[in-house]
Length: 264
Length: 283
Image (cartoon, rainbow over all chains, first blue to last red; front, top):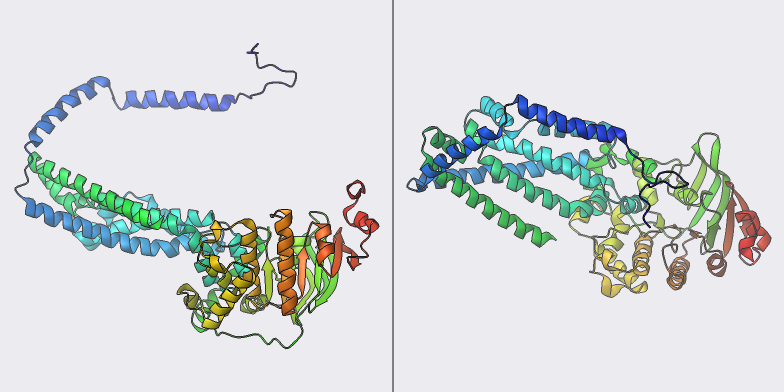
């Protein structure tokens, strides 16, 4: 026979947390309130579907006649992503190491962590606007933007990966009188190498996608052309740009899969 | 436990470049008799509550000492006070006459090269090869950039192969450490400690993660290698029978002090009762 009351001589088996239940009710109430406040309604969504269909209809047939512009823009986009990834990943290695609290004293981890937080606090678009103001229109602004984005992401994850390593080999190498740098090289880096390569290839992917976007604010790459086509109602060319971005991202996805496969 | 003491003051920024560029390959003079002398060692994690209270003993040459005692009595702390992985509160530790407790920074690091250590959980770098793990024992002697490029002096590589042969793992030299069994890993750990050419060999429960047969093999190997090289050998061990069978001296720790120090043959049930308390486990 099943005892549904859950009552035993020892008390209840599961304790009810009323605070957590009240919390869920609050979250649901807030979502309904916010949707109402922002005038998010089903009717508007339906109307929007119709506009979207018109927009899509204007995109076909896709216009690839200006393919030379497209190719040169794509190349610039890739260049921005590659250069930014190379520098960003290169810098995030020492910064991540300095931010690891299990290896470094707090007077080093604090500034390193602060720098990482600063890199992460702004979306790349905001960084791009700042750098366009600072160094002018063009790819340099985009590269600087994505370097900071890369340091923020890879540096943080790398520091966390180092904080999760086993300290047993570190202890052993310290006990044998190995210098600090050798301890890092032999006991720390081998434990995080694969994850670092994973983060880096993921960040390269992200940089490629973001480098198509920084152009919208004038920081170089295909984004500028995309924005211009959009404003001139040049929807068939816009479709060509979007398709080539999709192709680019798929190619890079394929390449990063192969790279990760090599290092498994 | 040990690491919060050992790691943080370990970043020697001032020595960074000097170490990077100019580490010579010094060889230790081997004519003096190797010895370990512990003098009135005290360790307090909480002030006023010593976990080790005035430990003194001396070991020389081919002598082997088993340290036995109940869990939590400070056996591991004692072993780690020798190489200052845990800094002692007071007292002195001499390795072949050099006072370790006074040292810090680069001097401490160089002194640690004279102290080999074998761990309960082997403490190998899992993702490196067996050969690389053995050569970790030489990292204290070569510059980091040479270590990074794997540019070890030829004679060190030869000795690594000889030691791998001695522990029976030559054919595993290029395998990754995580592909080995527990007993094989501990053999790598032993080779890594011996290649340091230490003046004292410390072992912290080296057989506790191993099955009984492998434990005996590891004990035999540790004693064989330390005796033929004249390295004094100190081992923490739970297994009293194993200790009595292999070591030449037993030190019983209890309540922070030494309650037995003598030959394994004379270690009586009364002594064991004094060390571990109770008597029913001896039946």
